[in-house]
Image (tube, rainbow, N blue to C red; front, side):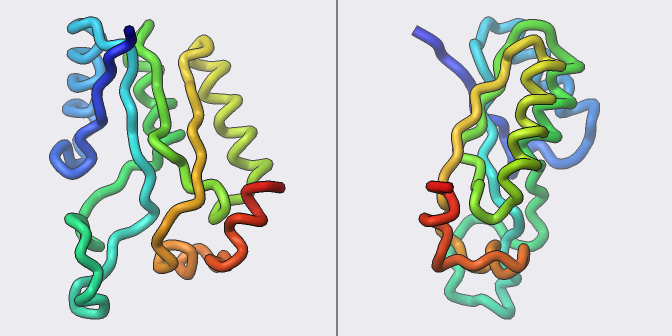
Length: 139
């Protein structure tokens, strides 16, 4: 059985030393992987009062593949798992290259999970069509 931890996106903030310490502690405790979820942005509660998620424009979201690249350099054996990278709002070939690079530089420690996403707010921010996301992920 593999037991991992979820990266504390809301709680950890942006201090590289704290992020490094978290990953190294998880590895030292014997966890098999760190999982990070993907959101591009949160909503401005003034402009989107019906957006009822626990994050806003002020919540720092670390980009998973960049985060994993950093964590790979800070650790030696713990794996990295994207808890659904929202693929259709990104360029597919670029994501493939980025994921391959993290996997190569980490010594094969990346497991990539992709999904559709559910917030059209993020798609609009990327200039991507929310309505065609299913067709694009199939491609």
